Amino acid sequence: MSANSTPSELTVRPLTSDQHLAWIQSQDGSGSISFLQTPAWGQVKADWRHESLGWFDGEQLVSAALVLYRPIPRLKWSLAYLPEGPTFPTLTPGPAAHWVNPLTAYLKGKKVFTIKMGPPVIVRQWSANAIKDAIATSSAKLQDVVPDMSNDQATELVAQLRALGWHQEVAEGDGFGDVQPRFVFQLDLRDKSVDDLFNGMNQEWRRNIRKAEKSGVEVIEGTFDDLANFHAVYVETAQRDRFTPRPLRYFERMWKAMEAEDPARLRLFLAKKRRRRFGRDHVGHGGRARVVFLR
Image 1 (cartoon, rainbow, N blue to C red):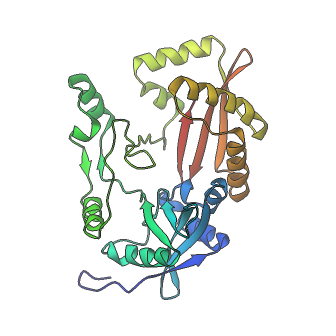
Image 2: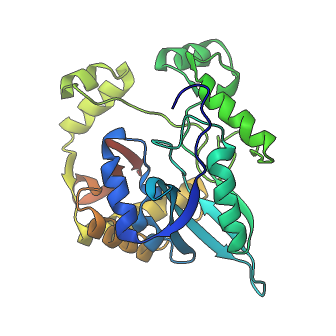
Image 3: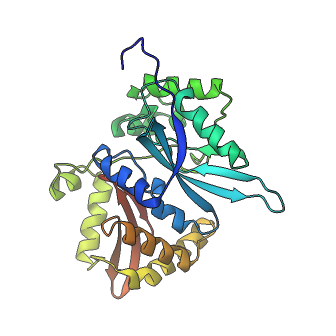
């Protein structure tokens, strides 16, 4: 498409789970699609209705998204939520109205009164050194620290969405401005040995790792049957950090749904010492992984 050409009009239509998954697999190398945008995640969120949608240029599928619907009691209206979506492997470049207006029109036809979405667009990036320097010299919040990189295209996307009437909630002190974390730490593990990763840690972390090794801490990969052990530690963590834990059946449902769609997507690691186990949950997709540590 040339700089002066007008993008063709897109339409939004439902997809089957198989069609949605096939599109995800065709984009797998991009690493930009969250596991929250897979058909399996719709099965995990049992309290929501879910639907896979596709953007079509004529008859060609150019993008897809998972939409969750939360009905309002006693009314025929619903809230629609696209967790960490939609993704943009083939929706950009182009004006935001090109893809968001067909989505809005479709969802209005489904009696949706409000739409929440969280496209995984990186607006600013900070290096580890920049963050460490900011912590050492001031008590400024992360959004006040000068970034190492700013994405002009992402900034323009935000401006276009606001011009179309979309609103972004203000991030609170804990970094949650919407439903998902506003700030995410990414650690590049590519082409790095265990020694490279160990040497990249600060002195305190290296000392703690050596101490754990000497005291007999062992990391093992768990199975579905270990979810109960994981959940016990998770509940203990929730009580200490004062958040409401999800029931064990939620994680069992997540395991079954994710594994059925892609056996390599979810892995459970447990740190074991003298029969006591500590859990870590790892959900990955598209060459990236999300890790939750519990202790």
